[in-house]
Length: 157
Image (cartoon, rainbow, N blue to C red; front, side):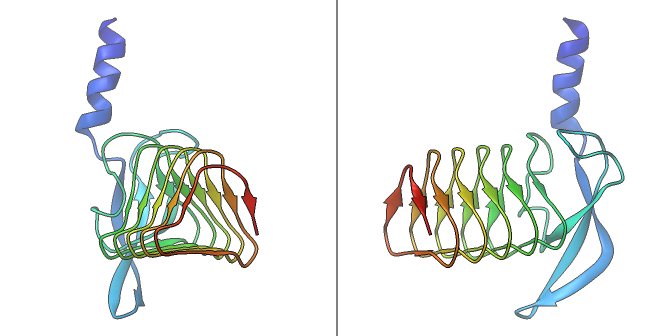
């Protein structure tokens, strides 16, 4: 029991990642590549991830959320819980990606969009405005979901 409590406390105490000196500029914003400081999920200490504007974009204490490869998260956008962002995906504005959602390929999530549950957004799909994607929905191809649309399941492309 003590080991389990100790491990749980460690998850809340030590940062998961740090910002490196490697930067890119996107829309006038400086984004920093991230590097894992400890093992969690499929990420190992030392692994290099994608780009964030600040540590506010990716939860730095708990969960297994991670930004991989050349994916970018910036503005007031946030990735947390166990969500994954891969490839060349871009998350920005006030978008929220959480639970075990996955965003990858060249997908773009922006505005006040929310992606959660087991939802997957990929290929060239765009989710914007106040759209909500939940459940096991898959949005892909060149699909665009916007305004106040709410999709809880299904395969849209």
